[in-house]
Each structure stands twice: as C-alpha cells, then as structure tokens.
Length: 230
Image (cartoon, rainbow, N blue to C red; front, side, top):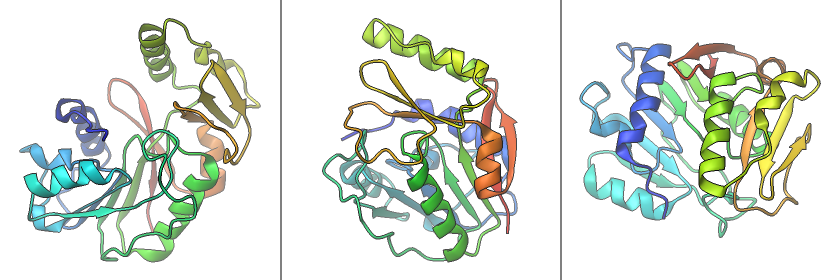
C-alpha cells in the first residue's frame, strides 16, 4: 500500500487552485487520488458526495472510503511499474459517472509511459462531460522540478544520473528515468522495461501537439499543467 501523505497534498491542491478556483465546479474526478487527500482541506470546495477518486492502489482507496464514506472510491486495477505491479496491463477503464466538471490528475502520468497517458486522456475526452481536464507534468525544461527530483534521488539512493541536463536536449520529447540511473529517450511505450522506479518527463510542446490544450505554469515549483477544455 502506498498512502500518499496528506501534508504533501498541499502542493497538489494549491497548484490546482491556481489553475481553477473551483467556484464553478460541482463534480470532481480525482484520477490517481490515492486516499482522497484533497477532501481533508477546508479550502477544497467540492462536496464529498460529488467527489470521485480512482486509483490503482486498492488498499489506499479502502482507507479513503472509511475516512470519507460519502465520497466514491473506485479501484482501477491497471498495471503500474511503481504503484501496482500485480495489476492487469489490459485492464478496461472503470465505469464512472460521466458528468465530471473537473478531472484532475496529479503525479499520475509522471509515472506512466506516453502511450498510457495518451490513451487515458483520449478516453477522458470521449467519455466525460467536463469543463476542464487538469494534469500535472514534469517538463524537460522544468528547472526547479528537475533539480528537486535530482536532489531527492541523490539523498535517497546516493547518486543519480543528472536529469537536469535534459534542459539542454532540444530533441528529447520524452524521457523515462528508470532504475540503475538509466534514461530512455523518445520512446512512446515502455512495456518491456522492468523497474521499481519510473519517472516521466516531457517536452511540453510535444504534449500539446499530441493532445491539444494549453500549458499553465503554477506554484513556486513551476509545475507545468496540461489544461484541456471541450
């Protein structure tokens, strides 16, 4: 079980509120919402009964369902290299109420390959009646974020390949950081890559070409968010 600490969700909530203040939102889909941490904050304005959380970690969802019984917690048993290695690679998308004003994914597609990212976003666009889809990314030129992740990896593992150099690689659209200090570049899929850690970084202009939308840079960490409107 990977319980994401509630206190760390301050970053995701503050970033979200910079993109949209949620005053016009009633329903909310938290894609990869773990135990529903957003519901713990007083300045998160969505009613619990209008909040849906989807995650690959069933145990984290069970914790959320006990804490917030009014909300809807849905298990998506999709394989994930980091968070659900026993899941199904070909898992069908879950059945969810299609009326979702805001669809939010924070630190989700930073741990999948691009094929899964694109497939999921296209499904969201085709399936839901929504006002905004809001997705956090890590850009290949996100200097503050790359420095943060590099330092964290060095502190945790003793060393790291220098992902900060990606800012100097204009031809790199996709970069997967895996185990053993390896970076895989410009590969749409990563099905054959076996690893315990998996971090994905994008040239944001490539993402816009593939999926449309706009990029908004928010928070002191200068997170790039993909924002898609109908």
